[in-house]
Length: 169
Image (cartoon, rainbow, N blue to C red; front, side, top):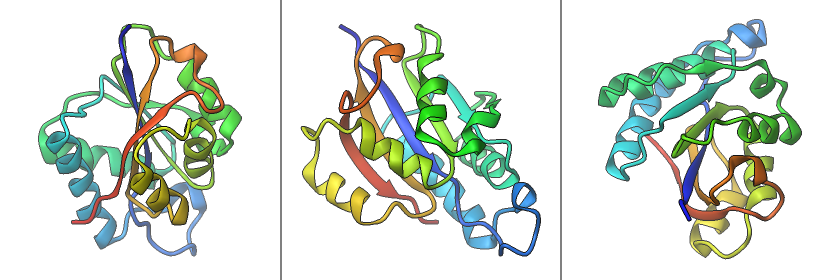
């Protein structure tokens, strides 16, 4: 049985809400934190085979800077469902992941990133990571889950939380 990994990444810190939401860019801190996400992924040998990103500028910039920081060449798939921001949409995106993908990263927004992490957590993983994740899922937060052999079978309480971090640059 092959264990796959799912990375639920909340976009890095964005500029103020004065702009059109979809066009909000990363703040200076967000740009530094996005690069730190890449270093964190490399340190844990979690370079994704597939990345699905919200069409929001801040999410696309987060992945771009993450990938550049460690030389990752995976082209992201932009998917409106990630921006729709519901658990159901994220689970649908995950279920449609090709079977050959070993590590999937979703770069999106709260509340759906946090809510999806809470929904799929089977409660058997790292208790310190779970405590941190449930207290606050900040910008640049990364939840790393072990998932069974079939992406389509992911659902409520079916993934094991390995670690959680908030990358800071």
